Image (cartoon, rainbow, N blue to C red; front, side, top):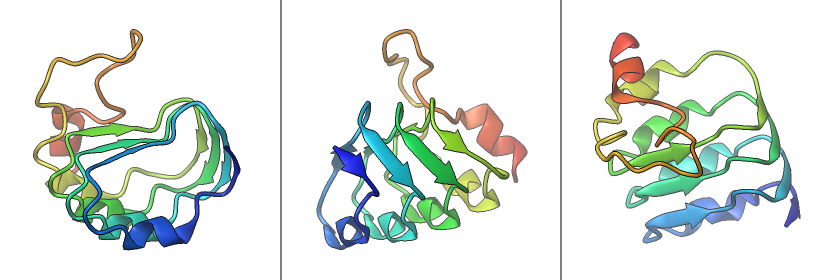
Length: 111
């Protein structure tokens, strides 16, 4: 896939796994993805995404894996992500990458 991530994905309220890794996605991560309250895995790694990480991703309380590596993101990690208590619960790795862009230790430092 190429181009921006459609904002309309934020209306898929029952989706649990969203994997869009290793495409040619560009532009910002839509803040509407923060509406996906049932989401467990969000894989957006290895794209050309730019801009800041939306603070609305802090709404994803069920999230266990958040893959954002190998993009062109900028800015600070939003404080709202410190409430993602399920991040990093497993020892799962992805092709030698850490299980998540964020670890529980890193998120605890935001509190």
